[in-house]
Amino acid sequence: MLRLPRTIEWVDGRVRLINQLKLPHELEYVETSDWRRVAEAIRRMEIRGAPAIGVAAAFAMALAAVHSRAGSLEEALRELEECARILKSTRPTAVNLPWAVDRVLRAARAAADVEELREMVVRAALEVQRMDEECNRRIGELGEQLIDDGDTVMTICNAGSLATSYYGTATAPIYLAHERGKRVRVIALETRPYLQGARLTAWELKQAGIEVKVVTDNAMGIVMEREGVNLVIVGADRVTRRGYVANKVGTYPLALVAREHGVPFYVAAPTSSFDLSIEGPGEIPIEVRPSEEVVYIYGRRIAPEGVEAIYYAFDVTPPKLITGIITERGIFYPPYEKSIRRLLSAA
Ligand code: MRU
Image (cartoon, rainbow, N blue to C red; front, side):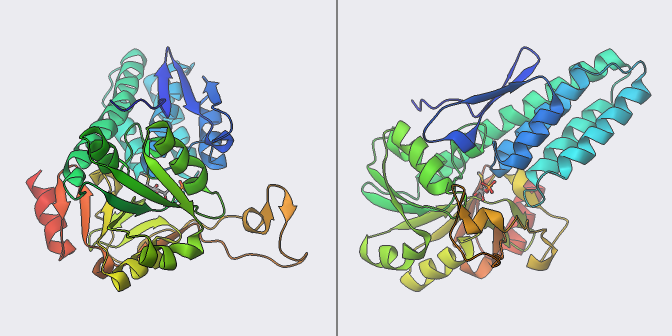
Protein backbone atom coordinates (compact mmCIF):
# COMPACT_ATOMS: atom_id res chain seq x y z
CA MET A 1 0.00 0.00 0.00
CA LEU A 2 1.31 3.38 -1.03
CA ARG A 3 1.43 5.74 1.94
CA LEU A 4 2.02 9.29 0.78
CA PRO A 5 0.41 12.45 2.09
CA ARG A 6 -2.38 13.86 -0.07
CA THR A 7 -1.20 16.66 -2.38
CA ILE A 8 -4.48 18.55 -2.11
CA GLU A 9 -7.73 17.98 -0.22
CA TRP A 10 -11.16 19.51 0.16
CA VAL A 11 -11.87 19.65 3.90
CA ASP A 12 -15.17 21.10 5.17
CA GLY A 13 -15.41 23.90 2.63
CA ARG A 14 -11.69 24.66 2.74
CA VAL A 15 -8.71 23.66 0.61
CA ARG A 16 -5.60 22.14 2.13
CA LEU A 17 -2.55 21.65 -0.07
CA ILE A 18 1.09 20.76 0.47
CA ASN A 19 3.33 23.78 -0.02
CA GLN A 20 5.78 22.15 -2.41
CA LEU A 21 8.22 25.05 -2.25
CA LYS A 22 9.06 23.89 1.30
CA LEU A 23 9.87 20.29 0.37
CA PRO A 24 11.96 18.28 1.10
CA HIS A 25 12.82 20.11 4.33
CA GLU A 26 9.34 20.79 5.68
CA LEU A 27 5.95 19.22 5.09
CA GLU A 28 3.95 22.42 5.40
CA TYR A 29 0.36 22.97 4.29
CA VAL A 30 -1.48 25.96 2.86
CA GLU A 31 -5.06 25.99 4.18
CA THR A 32 -7.55 28.47 2.86
CA SER A 33 -11.17 29.23 2.11
CA ASP A 34 -10.19 31.99 -0.35
CA TRP A 35 -10.11 30.98 -4.03
CA ARG A 36 -7.65 33.80 -4.79
CA ARG A 37 -5.14 32.24 -2.40
CA VAL A 38 -5.40 28.97 -4.36
CA ALA A 39 -4.83 30.89 -7.62
CA GLU A 40 -1.78 32.45 -5.96
CA ALA A 41 -0.53 29.01 -4.87
CA ILE A 42 -0.69 27.84 -8.51
CA ARG A 43 1.07 30.97 -9.76
CA ARG A 44 3.84 30.73 -7.12
CA MET A 45 4.19 26.98 -7.74
CA GLU A 46 3.34 26.04 -4.16
CA ILE A 47 1.28 23.48 -6.03
CA ARG A 48 2.41 22.43 -9.51
CA GLY A 49 2.22 19.53 -11.95
CA ALA A 50 -0.45 19.45 -14.66
CA PRO A 51 -3.16 17.30 -13.02
CA ALA A 52 -2.58 18.84 -9.56
CA ILE A 53 -3.09 22.37 -10.83
CA GLY A 54 -6.24 21.15 -12.58
CA VAL A 55 -7.58 19.85 -9.25
CA ALA A 56 -6.45 23.01 -7.45
CA ALA A 57 -8.25 25.20 -10.00
CA ALA A 58 -11.41 23.07 -9.71
CA PHE A 59 -11.28 23.43 -5.90
CA ALA A 60 -10.71 27.19 -6.26
CA MET A 61 -13.93 27.36 -8.29
CA ALA A 62 -15.69 25.39 -5.55
CA LEU A 63 -14.42 27.85 -2.91
CA ALA A 64 -15.66 30.76 -5.00
CA ALA A 65 -19.11 29.16 -5.25
CA VAL A 66 -19.41 28.08 -1.62
CA HIS A 67 -18.32 31.44 -0.21
CA SER A 68 -20.13 33.57 -2.78
CA ARG A 69 -22.64 36.15 -1.52
CA ALA A 70 -24.36 36.36 -4.90
CA GLY A 71 -28.07 37.01 -4.60
CA SER A 72 -29.03 35.53 -7.96
CA LEU A 73 -27.97 32.68 -10.22
CA GLU A 74 -26.83 35.15 -12.90
CA GLU A 75 -24.61 36.97 -10.42
CA ALA A 76 -23.12 33.70 -9.10
CA LEU A 77 -22.37 32.59 -12.67
CA ARG A 78 -20.75 35.92 -13.51
CA GLU A 79 -18.51 35.59 -10.43
CA LEU A 80 -17.52 32.06 -11.39
CA GLU A 81 -16.75 33.09 -14.96
CA GLU A 82 -14.41 35.80 -13.66
CA CYS A 83 -12.81 33.30 -11.29
CA ALA A 84 -12.35 30.86 -14.24
CA ARG A 85 -10.71 33.59 -16.33
CA ILE A 86 -8.20 34.43 -13.58
CA LEU A 87 -7.44 30.77 -12.83
CA LYS A 88 -6.78 30.04 -16.51
CA SER A 89 -4.22 32.84 -16.62
CA THR A 90 -2.12 31.44 -13.75
CA ARG A 91 -0.07 28.95 -15.78
CA PRO A 92 -0.41 28.56 -19.55
CA THR A 93 1.07 25.23 -20.64
CA ALA A 94 -0.83 22.47 -18.80
CA VAL A 95 -4.15 21.91 -20.54
CA ASN A 96 -5.52 20.10 -17.45
CA LEU A 97 -6.11 23.48 -15.85
CA PRO A 98 -8.60 24.91 -18.40
CA TRP A 99 -10.01 21.39 -18.84
CA ALA A 100 -10.87 21.17 -15.11
CA VAL A 101 -12.14 24.78 -14.88
CA ASP A 102 -14.43 24.29 -17.88
CA ARG A 103 -15.86 21.06 -16.45
CA VAL A 104 -16.77 22.86 -13.23
CA LEU A 105 -18.18 25.81 -15.15
CA ARG A 106 -20.39 23.48 -17.21
CA ALA A 107 -21.78 22.00 -13.97
CA ALA A 108 -22.50 25.51 -12.67
CA ARG A 109 -24.34 26.47 -15.85
CA ALA A 110 -26.68 23.50 -15.45
CA ALA A 111 -27.89 24.67 -12.00
CA ALA A 112 -31.40 26.02 -11.47
CA ASP A 113 -30.58 28.29 -8.50
CA VAL A 114 -27.66 29.47 -6.36
CA GLU A 115 -28.00 26.67 -3.82
CA GLU A 116 -27.93 24.03 -6.54
CA LEU A 117 -25.01 25.79 -8.22
CA ARG A 118 -22.97 25.46 -5.00
CA GLU A 119 -23.74 21.77 -4.69
CA MET A 120 -23.05 21.02 -8.34
CA VAL A 121 -19.79 22.95 -8.41
CA VAL A 122 -18.43 21.19 -5.32
CA ARG A 123 -19.52 17.82 -6.70
CA ALA A 124 -17.86 18.54 -10.08
CA ALA A 125 -14.62 19.64 -8.41
CA LEU A 126 -14.47 16.52 -6.25
CA GLU A 127 -15.16 14.47 -9.37
CA VAL A 128 -12.12 16.04 -11.11
CA GLN A 129 -9.98 14.87 -8.20
CA ARG A 130 -11.53 11.38 -8.04
CA MET A 131 -11.12 10.87 -11.80
CA ASP A 132 -7.50 11.94 -11.67
CA GLU A 133 -6.67 9.41 -8.97
CA GLU A 134 -8.52 6.66 -10.82
CA CYS A 135 -6.78 7.49 -14.13
CA ASN A 136 -3.38 7.41 -12.48
CA ARG A 137 -4.05 4.04 -10.86
CA ARG A 138 -5.01 2.69 -14.30
CA ILE A 139 -1.90 4.27 -15.89
CA GLY A 140 0.06 2.48 -13.16
CA GLU A 141 -1.52 -0.87 -13.96
CA LEU A 142 -0.82 -0.56 -17.69
CA GLY A 143 2.64 0.93 -17.30
CA GLU A 144 3.73 -1.56 -14.67
CA GLN A 145 3.78 -4.23 -17.37
CA LEU A 146 6.61 -2.35 -19.08
CA ILE A 147 8.85 -2.67 -16.01
CA ASP A 148 10.90 -5.82 -15.31
CA ASP A 149 12.30 -6.89 -11.98
CA GLY A 150 15.64 -5.11 -11.46
CA ASP A 151 14.98 -2.29 -13.95
CA THR A 152 16.38 1.23 -13.72
CA VAL A 153 13.94 3.95 -14.78
CA MET A 154 14.96 7.52 -15.56
CA THR A 155 12.55 10.42 -15.17
CA ILE A 156 12.58 14.21 -15.22
CA CYS A 157 10.86 16.86 -13.10
CA ASN A 158 8.13 15.52 -10.81
CA ALA A 159 5.31 13.69 -12.50
CA GLY A 160 4.70 11.98 -9.20
CA SER A 161 1.96 11.85 -6.62
CA LEU A 162 2.79 15.46 -5.70
CA ALA A 163 1.96 16.53 -9.26
CA THR A 164 -1.46 14.83 -9.18
CA SER A 165 -4.23 13.79 -6.78
CA TYR A 166 -2.37 10.57 -6.03
CA TYR A 167 0.06 7.99 -7.53
CA GLY A 168 1.40 10.41 -10.13
CA THR A 169 1.56 9.63 -13.83
CA ALA A 170 5.21 8.74 -14.57
CA THR A 171 5.58 7.32 -11.06
CA ALA A 172 2.35 5.27 -11.05
CA PRO A 173 3.91 2.34 -12.99
CA ILE A 174 6.89 2.46 -10.62
CA TYR A 175 4.68 2.42 -7.49
CA LEU A 176 2.61 -0.44 -8.88
CA ALA A 177 5.73 -2.43 -9.87
CA HIS A 178 7.12 -1.91 -6.36
CA GLU A 179 3.78 -2.92 -4.79
CA ARG A 180 3.90 -6.12 -6.86
CA GLY A 181 7.34 -7.03 -5.56
CA LYS A 182 9.54 -5.91 -8.47
CA ARG A 183 12.82 -4.24 -7.58
CA VAL A 184 12.98 -0.86 -9.34
CA ARG A 185 15.67 1.78 -9.16
CA VAL A 186 14.85 5.33 -10.23
CA ILE A 187 17.21 7.97 -11.56
CA ALA A 188 15.70 11.43 -11.14
CA LEU A 189 17.08 14.32 -13.17
CA GLU A 190 17.37 17.22 -10.73
CA THR A 191 15.48 19.61 -13.09
CA ARG A 192 16.96 23.09 -12.93
CA PRO A 193 15.92 25.66 -11.83
CA TYR A 194 13.01 24.54 -9.59
CA LEU A 195 14.66 21.23 -8.77
CA GLN A 196 11.42 19.28 -8.87
CA GLY A 197 13.45 16.08 -9.47
CA ALA A 198 15.92 16.55 -6.64
CA ARG A 199 13.42 17.98 -4.15
CA LEU A 200 10.09 16.37 -4.96
CA THR A 201 10.57 13.14 -6.93
CA ALA A 202 13.43 12.07 -4.67
CA TRP A 203 11.34 12.94 -1.59
CA GLU A 204 8.23 11.02 -2.52
CA LEU A 205 10.07 7.95 -3.83
CA LYS A 206 12.11 7.83 -0.64
CA GLN A 207 8.89 8.07 1.41
CA ALA A 208 7.54 5.15 -0.61
CA GLY A 209 10.68 3.07 0.03
CA ILE A 210 11.93 3.08 -3.58
CA GLU A 211 15.63 3.39 -4.37
CA VAL A 212 16.29 6.74 -6.00
CA LYS A 213 19.41 8.54 -7.18
CA VAL A 214 19.57 12.17 -8.27
CA VAL A 215 21.72 13.28 -11.21
CA THR A 216 22.28 16.72 -12.69
CA ASP A 217 20.40 17.36 -15.91
CA ASN A 218 23.57 17.59 -17.97
CA ALA A 219 24.65 14.11 -16.79
CA MET A 220 21.76 12.40 -18.58
CA GLY A 221 23.98 11.12 -21.43
CA ILE A 222 26.78 9.56 -19.42
CA VAL A 223 24.33 8.19 -16.84
CA MET A 224 22.17 6.61 -19.53
CA GLU A 225 25.32 5.04 -21.00
CA ARG A 226 26.91 3.78 -17.77
CA GLU A 227 24.07 3.10 -15.31
CA GLY A 228 22.01 0.53 -17.19
CA VAL A 229 18.90 2.66 -17.70
CA ASN A 230 16.22 0.33 -19.16
CA LEU A 231 13.35 2.73 -19.50
CA VAL A 232 12.48 6.44 -19.46
CA ILE A 233 9.04 7.55 -18.25
CA VAL A 234 8.04 11.22 -18.17
CA GLY A 235 4.82 13.16 -17.62
CA ALA A 236 3.06 15.63 -19.93
CA ASP A 237 1.44 19.03 -19.70
CA ARG A 238 -0.20 18.95 -23.12
CA VAL A 239 -0.36 16.32 -25.86
CA THR A 240 -1.51 17.38 -29.33
CA ARG A 241 -3.55 15.16 -31.61
CA ARG A 242 -0.43 14.32 -33.63
CA GLY A 243 1.38 13.21 -30.48
CA TYR A 244 3.62 16.21 -29.78
CA VAL A 245 4.24 16.32 -26.03
CA ALA A 246 4.91 19.46 -23.99
CA ASN A 247 6.58 18.66 -20.68
CA LYS A 248 9.19 20.16 -18.34
CA VAL A 249 12.12 21.69 -20.20
CA GLY A 250 14.78 19.01 -20.64
CA THR A 251 12.32 16.31 -21.69
CA TYR A 252 13.10 16.77 -25.39
CA PRO A 253 16.90 16.34 -24.99
CA LEU A 254 16.17 13.36 -22.72
CA ALA A 255 14.14 11.77 -25.55
CA LEU A 256 17.03 12.37 -27.97
CA VAL A 257 19.53 10.75 -25.61
CA ALA A 258 17.17 7.80 -25.05
CA ARG A 259 16.79 7.32 -28.82
CA GLU A 260 20.58 7.37 -29.28
CA HIS A 261 20.98 4.66 -26.63
CA GLY A 262 18.02 2.52 -27.75
CA VAL A 263 16.21 3.07 -24.44
CA PRO A 264 12.37 3.08 -24.69
CA PHE A 265 10.93 6.53 -23.99
CA TYR A 266 7.37 6.57 -22.64
CA VAL A 267 5.08 9.45 -21.73
CA ALA A 268 2.49 8.79 -19.00
CA ALA A 269 -0.52 11.10 -19.06
CA PRO A 270 -4.26 10.99 -18.45
CA THR A 271 -6.44 11.89 -21.42
CA SER A 272 -7.25 15.16 -19.61
CA SER A 273 -3.73 16.22 -20.71
CA PHE A 274 -4.67 15.83 -24.39
CA ASP A 275 -5.56 18.90 -26.40
CA LEU A 276 -7.21 17.59 -29.54
CA SER A 277 -7.90 21.11 -30.79
CA ILE A 278 -4.26 21.49 -31.82
CA GLU A 279 -1.84 19.54 -34.00
CA GLY A 280 1.68 20.81 -34.07
CA PRO A 281 4.36 21.99 -31.65
CA GLY A 282 4.06 25.68 -32.51
CA GLU A 283 0.48 25.83 -31.26
CA ILE A 284 1.36 24.85 -27.69
CA PRO A 285 1.64 27.85 -25.33
CA ILE A 286 5.04 27.53 -23.68
CA GLU A 287 5.41 29.24 -20.31
CA VAL A 288 8.30 31.68 -20.14
CA ARG A 289 9.30 32.42 -16.56
CA PRO A 290 11.38 35.25 -15.07
CA SER A 291 15.12 35.34 -15.69
CA GLU A 292 15.74 35.71 -11.92
CA GLU A 293 14.63 32.13 -11.32
CA VAL A 294 17.65 30.96 -13.34
CA VAL A 295 20.36 33.49 -12.49
CA TYR A 296 19.73 33.32 -8.74
CA ILE A 297 20.08 30.18 -6.64
CA TYR A 298 18.56 30.48 -3.16
CA GLY A 299 18.84 34.26 -3.30
CA ARG A 300 22.44 34.40 -4.57
CA ARG A 301 23.27 35.60 -8.07
CA ILE A 302 25.30 33.05 -10.04
CA ALA A 303 25.60 34.92 -13.35
CA PRO A 304 27.31 38.33 -13.70
CA GLU A 305 25.19 41.41 -12.96
CA GLY A 306 23.46 42.61 -16.11
CA VAL A 307 23.27 39.15 -17.73
CA GLU A 308 19.81 37.69 -18.16
CA ALA A 309 18.63 34.14 -18.74
CA ILE A 310 16.35 32.69 -21.40
CA TYR A 311 13.91 30.55 -19.48
CA TYR A 312 11.37 28.45 -21.32
CA ALA A 313 9.80 26.30 -18.60
CA PHE A 314 8.66 23.58 -21.03
CA ASP A 315 9.78 22.02 -24.29
CA VAL A 316 8.08 19.90 -26.92
CA THR A 317 9.09 16.35 -27.78
CA PRO A 318 8.17 15.25 -31.31
CA PRO A 319 6.19 12.02 -31.72
CA LYS A 320 9.00 10.31 -33.65
CA LEU A 321 11.03 10.15 -30.41
CA ILE A 322 8.21 8.70 -28.28
CA THR A 323 7.93 4.91 -27.93
CA GLY A 324 4.43 5.05 -26.43
CA ILE A 325 2.00 7.19 -24.46
CA ILE A 326 0.50 5.46 -21.41
CA THR A 327 -3.02 6.71 -20.67
CA GLU A 328 -5.89 5.39 -18.58
CA ARG A 329 -7.51 4.22 -21.81
CA GLY A 330 -4.59 2.17 -23.04
CA ILE A 331 -1.08 2.66 -24.36
CA PHE A 332 -0.97 4.66 -27.59
CA TYR A 333 1.68 3.70 -30.13
CA PRO A 334 2.75 5.42 -33.37
CA PRO A 335 1.38 6.59 -35.68
CA TYR A 336 -0.17 8.73 -32.93
CA GLU A 337 -2.55 10.61 -35.14
CA LYS A 338 -4.36 7.32 -35.76
CA SER A 339 -4.00 5.65 -32.36
CA ILE A 340 -5.07 8.77 -30.44
CA ARG A 341 -8.11 9.27 -32.67
CA ARG A 342 -9.09 5.58 -32.53
CA LEU A 343 -8.73 5.18 -28.78
CA LEU A 344 -10.35 8.46 -27.82
CA SER A 345 -13.31 8.00 -30.13
CA ALA A 346 -13.86 4.44 -28.82
CA ALA A 347 -14.18 5.76 -25.24
O1 MRU B 1 6.54 23.40 -13.78
P1 MRU B 1 5.90 22.17 -13.21
O2 MRU B 1 6.58 21.65 -12.00
O3 MRU B 1 4.41 22.34 -13.02
O4 MRU B 1 6.09 21.09 -14.37
C1 MRU B 1 5.54 19.82 -14.19
C2 MRU B 1 5.85 18.87 -15.28
O5 MRU B 1 6.49 19.19 -16.25
C3 MRU B 1 5.26 17.49 -15.15
O6 MRU B 1 6.06 16.55 -15.78
C4 MRU B 1 3.87 17.49 -15.81
O7 MRU B 1 3.09 18.54 -15.34
C5 MRU B 1 3.16 16.21 -15.58
S1 MRU B 1 2.68 16.00 -13.91
C6 MRU B 1 1.97 14.49 -13.75
